[in-house]
Structures are given as structure tokens and as C-alpha cells.
Image (cartoon, rainbow, N blue to C red; front, side, top):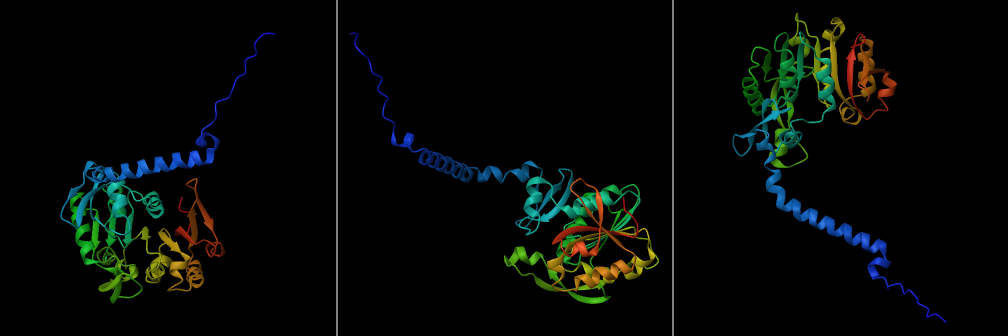
Length: 300
């Protein structure tokens, strides 16, 4: 009889027999290597703003570039868009996207709460050859930075910059000092006194075609001071940052929307396909946050 040969399977290791354990160990190792790499590469990551052409002014402020093109002075530790802008050149803002789309060459634009001027510089460049841009910034420190940014971009002939708060009254009023959030590292902004004026007062006897209001908490107060302009300017288009929760802390949102409707305004939101869709105020009560376009007629 021929000799028989038997194949003996080699005994598997513990890790081979326990695939979930093996996978967990491999993932943990990869994560450890990644953490070590990131720690080592922080200095490299911090070079990105400089590689984008950033110029440091002092420990607090720097000149970055918007869309890798337009110089803009910002605070380095700005709590809203400072780092995002410094590292990418953009702020990924739905409001900015709609505002840039709506504003055209030849427009007269008013921006309430211009802040450091991300929208200001981009849109004013569209009006460089035809149009006027009114930028309102109540915080005196931010106002000074924006004034310098306007000069850096050679837009003095396009932009009228005013150190004013736009509200529903004329006179003096308290405003939130959002710059204090980065200075104190708190969640509550300090308040400072500011001169304030209404849009109706600012543009009495003047033409305004676009009004930009990116103030989710206090935006309705701006519109209260623009009722006369809204009723009598049929070509006026308003881009409005809407947050039901934020606005409801200070206003009866339903009543505010009904009042604007009574003055002839229709409401539109930008869909994912970049088309504007008209919405009823009842629908807005179910939307937590949105960028609204308000107009008497279809703003397309």
C-alpha cells in the first residue's frame, strides 16, 4: 500500500482567529500615528496663511486675502470667520453666496453690520465701474480696520463707510461688541454705545436697490426703520439672515413677517439647485435658519 500523506493546517495565531480584535488594533495604531503626525505638523499647518500671502500686522491683526485675491484686515482670533478666512480665503456663508448673486453692477447697495468686510470687498468690486456701496459698521475698532481694507483695495470711490448702527431709531443705542468675544473668550458679548440711524433717514430722497442685513437676532429692528423705503421702492431687494429662534428672543416673528407682507414684500429662499423659490410666511415658521430674499417682484 502506498504511503499516505496528510496536510496539516498550520495553527492560526490569536490575532488571525480574532479579526475584530485585529481590526481594532490596526485602527488604533493608525490613529496614534495620525495624532503624532498632526502634533509634529502643527507648525506646517500654521504656515498655510503665510503661504496664501498673509501679512502679520501685530499680535492681534493680520492682512489676509479673500478668495486669494482681495486683501482684508482681520483679527487673528476672530470668533466668527477669522481662522476660516485666513486658512481658506472663504467663509462658506450662505448669506454671502446669495448676496453676491443678487447684487449687480449699477446697484446702490447698503450693508448693515459690515464687520471686517468680507461681503463688502467682494461685492463692491462688482460695482467698481458702476454703482455705489454703503457699508455700516458700528464697532469703532472694526470700522478702522475696514476703512484700511477699503484703501488697500482702492475702493474709496465705490464704498461709503459709516461708523453707525442701523436700527429702528435715530440717536444713541447700545450694541453688542462682538470683538469682545475674542478678547475675553466668553460666550456673551459686551455692550458699547453707538450712534444709530434708520435706513429711512439715511436714504431719504435717495435710491437704494439692495439692502443686506446679516443680523439674525436684530435684523427685524433694521427693517422696522426701513418701512417707508420698503413701501415706496418697488425695485428694492433685501437679503436677510433669518433665524426663527434668534429673532424670537426680541420680536414676535409671525407679526414681523405679516407686517412685511402687508407692505408688499414676497419671500424667497435659495434652493440647492441655486434657484430662488417663493415661500409663504407659514412655511418660514417651520424653517429654523434660512437666507431670505425679500422683494416686491420676482428678483431673478
